[in-house]
Image 1 (spheres, rainbow, N blue to C red):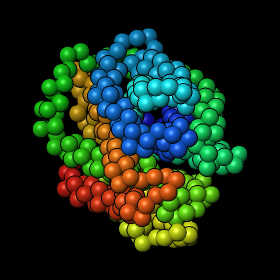
Image 2 (tube, rainbow, N blue to C red):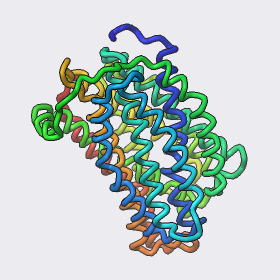
Image 3 (cartoon, helix red, strand yellow):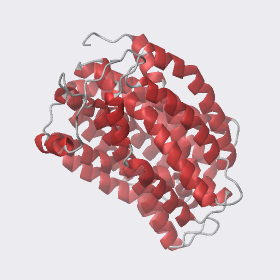
Image 4 (tube, rainbow, N blue to C red):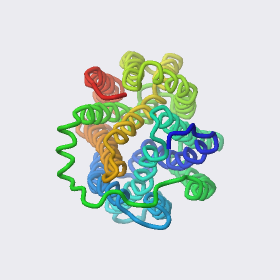
Length: 421
């Protein structure tokens, strides 16, 4: 399909990203803090358990993508996965925010793993649809932008709701309210996504082996380069997201400003998204993504110099780094969708498999962020009730310095990118 996509098509495709993003925010920001502060688990244990949960399901993602490529059903290849995954996601998310009095570490591991797996059941086929709805490079960018616009709107809504109810500093109440909001929005948009998105109902892949991926990476080094840069940049984004609440409370010492900071960050991402979309059409997606990463690195380079009460300097950093968010969310996956389209033949469909690997890489980055961040703080005996000066320095390094180094490494890799787009 090469025709110009209508606004209705973009809205139907993009809308499903909103509830998924609303769920993603609590898992990034509130869940570790909830289990360490409200439930009372040791911070290092929380980091290890969530890291193990990520590792427990991370290698399932390529298999989900592979199966969604080869499924034959009257409802299409992707939609059965999205429908079943949404149901499991809702149940497991409810369970993870309502742990029992005993075996809390085991409960956290099991249901975190189930949340991650069910999230993959929805998101991987959903991402793969990008490469199938249209074969036009610019239309795929429009689809990615629509998806990430709704994702940003979902994130802003997830931040705004607890803030409006004046519970943004209470991880327990915030998680409960966000779960209710997630269910309402999912019920509203899921039927439109399942009924309104046109997809291929036949399988074009029957005997693709995972060994062929080695050949694929060998013959397509630009794909491996893109994925390597994506992992580094995702880790750079996940580290400060995981440690954000701690940084605002113990370094800036303005926990009451948490909601405002997050809102400004994501609103900046929404405002800048059309700019990155248009810039990518002029300069190319890879160059535009590099520019966005450099912008975020320059902004975050000033984080280590902040001290308690530096609200306005942090707001400037938040807005500048937020401007690059739209590019981070839309352009890398759009580049991969272009690569998938270029590699696809009449006999072999790689969309689900490659986006399964994409989801796996995302989870590895998040797992590393939680593992590195929380375990490192545990090693220096970070105590949320009375943190030492040494642990505050490590927190600042992990939050502000490490992401800059990681993003610049990603920029270095993408400067040598010689793909098609």
